[in-house]
Length: 339
Image (cartoon, rainbow, N blue to C red; front, side, top):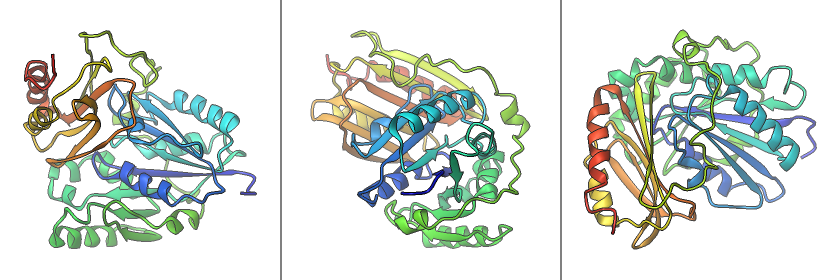
């Protein structure tokens, strides 16, 4: 690629709306002559999503757990992006903000003095799970609304899980957005044509990058404790972290890699969490290393190349926080963790 500025693509969207799955589908279509860098931000303190990516020489993945890129992690993002651009020299960068992350501060940072002559921010893509429009708690959430309002294009996800009525509602919802989006794509099985990414133009310079007060209150100097590169916790002493903001609570657990789980019992236990819980995990089981992903009450299972530790992240609305804390406590004695 001969462009003087590196294209940067922001793929935003609310919790559990299929952002990571969509990025996986784009990676599978990646031009063989391009090298990509993926920056994944997570609301949770432990960091799961980086473990969901296979290791490849032509795709560099960096996880930034523990906050919102526009708030607590703005300085960390700037350092990570500078390092990635200098060390790995990618032809293209994809940034996946947290499901509770606001795109405004991120866009402001990428247009700032540090990057204005280095990167070109292309169309912002928002993922929309049609089922979320049935939930007033999500539909009325300021960040959910702003993610869609700032998007240049929208990928309607969960095509195989949402009903035809829910998809029709989503189409009407998107059609009423102003100004009209450049494109709206209904994603089936988490896929999106690579051409929509490669042929995207630069995002409008007129976008409002005002960070809402709810996010401004979160702005702090971040710590990297509990970040993805931490050493594994000691054997028999799982690491536990929790945090709350924006109406949601995240709880993360990490186990030593030699500790193993009974996969069936583990899946059954995770199935007890309320349907509002967003659950992601990578586990060493008696059937090998597995990744589990649960959104809207549906649990999916796959193999994992991750071997550093077992880890679980659960994000719930604050009104369900006590329930999920109790369930996580019970996990330690449920029989899922093999002796």
